[in-house]
Length: 371
Image 1 (tube, rainbow, N blue to C red):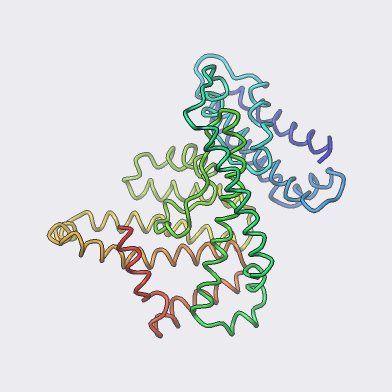
Image 2 (cartoon, rainbow, N blue to C red):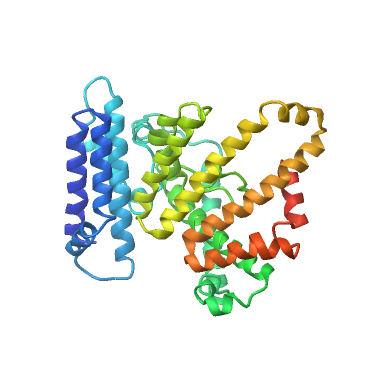
């Protein structure tokens, strides 16, 4: 990436370290979000990117990944320094934290308090069969990489959604399978990437955030994330900080709005990201509203009088619809807005009228079993 890139990242570190010495959380947040905006919004991002010389396939990805994750780590450092009662963390602590190579470009992000505690642990002892487990995971990830590479050579699940003429001719079942396959691809990509990085970090006696939960097991918005590191960061510094115990609707609404506002900036503001953030924010709040509604009489009394099996069936109905809502909202972030609209029309309207996807008995039974 060159020394200019390293100097650019280092300049962000110096600025945010200087702000961290003031020990004011609002200043740390403001400076961090301003730095993040500088690499996500025009014309500042183009100016910084033009400073990085050279040209190769991964340059854009490495530039935005390295700068973006560095700023998030520096914000974590600054906010944790505000919590430190005696003195300050050193600039060397920040450099060791930010420039740890396995995490540098693609994450996952470990909050500074966790990283600092693990790095300074002097009692480094391997658990029984730990090296065997690390070797097994490494071989498993290598096998998955080879399998996925073969699949992508023959299955065009990423290319087909861009051809709207072809997509409109697909049946409801094919379209739903294609949308679901795109999410599975993104989950496999994240699972393998974070799995490989975590395997290397484990060799350094670190306990990094785990790979994401399988998309098939996601039926609540509160668990819908493909990067546990970013999710932990947002929960610690935004969502839990503002929302508290998450039992009051106004505070929960404010917490989710602020969380998805930061997420929108992190992903890069654009029309698709705005729509994705709005619907996921609504889904997260709607789950709380429904839970609150059914926790008060007469709904709580009715459910208490039901048998366990009937309660699972009713929850299965809601979770089956919730699952496809999660699929639809995240298809939007992976594909074009036109493809997401087509999938939405098929799932909500045509699929329902033809006793299609949303009324699928197998999906319903699946979530009854999960419950």
